[in-house]
Length: 365
Image: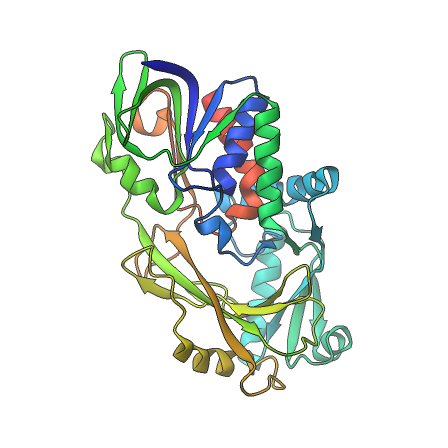
């Protein structure tokens, strides 16, 4: 049986960031990815937004790691030449009743250490984005966009430069906690023993945790799948910044984001599904998109929305429940030496990825 210091399961953006942090700390790292390429799950189906850190409860892991990760990510992109743009965003209220929510978002952001937010009047928002319809807005200049795949390739390069290895088509079938380490068995019969196992399997993280012999069931949360559908804009986009409506209970509403080529897309909405393989975008959902988008962009032309893609968020809360924080369990939480579980790593996981990597490396140390 081969022995390795650290095994990270999952080569999404967070798994790669964790593996990179461990390798840079001098650990021997092996990343096991079930797919035939890195970043093919949730990491490949996001809005590619670098979040500022506005919405998350003060003191939560999401708040702390988003703000820390945002600064690390901008610096990393600049140093590695990863394409990105600090384009900023406008969070908009479209009715008078929503105006108090803008103040609440500013207070939340400031409590999390976001110091550059500015409240805008209708006229000020209109100067910045003439096509926008709103009664007030908040400008977040620290929000940006990134080429997420280029970022993951850079993380993989750093990992490999530090001696780490990514193994593709490596599906874990079982995990046993044994004396002196953790034994991992692959579907092809290969067995490995590691001093540290990091479960960063994203949508499959709870399922993998259920297969860890020695981990008590009460430490394995129930996962839920929230599908987010996106529609692209088949017309010229009049906006230069991201446009977000005030937050909804289950998400951030149908917002407008831009990619680095200037292509606009709208989404995600929230559609609870039973399978993470349910990735088809139903064109009929576009009717609701038109209605929501026209609240802040009345000039959206008929027939301009085209089904684009869907992503699945790994939620820890069930439909109708309040949002849950990231759940990062170390040995102090579950009592299993050498095991770290990452559950519910949804947005702002991309923004937080480098900070999550440092956090997990600290737990492992």
